[in-house]
Image 1 (cartoon, rainbow, N blue to C red):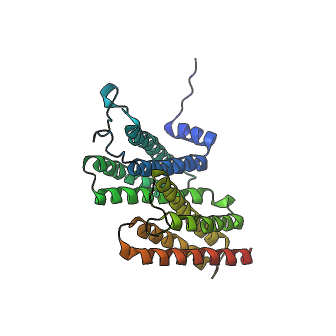
Image 2: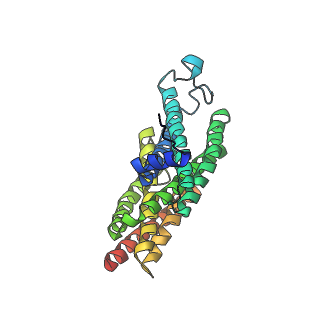
Image 3: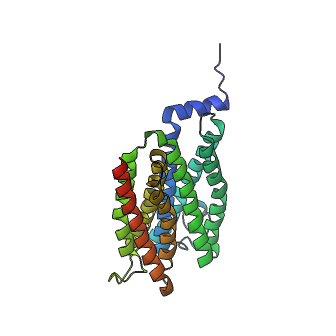
Length: 281
């Protein structure tokens, strides 16, 4: 009788060969984005404390592991998806570390994302036990940082298949998404009297879309073009971060004008990037 011996490296290699590392990283990025949006939904519906300030437990079922009502379900489901996102983050980082053919830049990005994940989990706990605006803000920005790290890593692993057409598409998406972000922002008086949880969720989905469009355009554009056409593409990501920062300060009237100025600059950047990339193409 003979037995097949499989080392840990061979098992990792077999799993990645079956699903491919770029697909694994894409799935992880999707889970991270879903976790962020579910967190926004929990906050917008006032469900952050719905599990009676229990963490990681909730308020019903054996050992209080399950939700007792609809508000508790929002918070419980956010944690449920976050758990799988955490497993995917750890799996992506370990696979990148163990596989010799993964770009070392990708490895560095996903390992850093894995290192930040326990910090994010601890901040998530603090939002339940303390629920202060500073902790909520830090929890959000850490999530955005993890999302950005995995987005950049995902673009790197797919880089060879991304062309100038993807740059144009990303810029077009940004041009469409930016006005929606402005209209939905509480910093702008668009005649919206009540910002429902659905509207807040859509706004943050648009925010992640803007960030993704800017990063894809910048990274792929830098690879496909050279010289001055790259300048507006590289300017877009930091402008998106400023738009996100000012847009979140809805209760501070002093930041309304900086938000509008930054959003206008970002729109000009997107349009300029579209013009120069189309001309180069």
